[in-house]
Image (cartoon, rainbow, N blue to C red; front, side, top):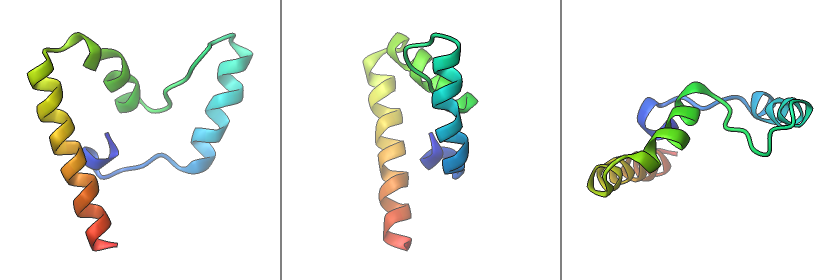
Length: 68
């Protein structure tokens, strides 16, 4: 989702999410609201829509890599 929004979570926030999930007996964690929404809503969407979103995200990552 960061490729669409242009924002990434800090590494520290992502690392802190793991132990918090373990403390609450969660088997996995998706830090950040947009990541959480994507992880839980995408599997329930039509394949064509998911493919279009994936293309847009992938294009954003590719373009960002070209700039760097």
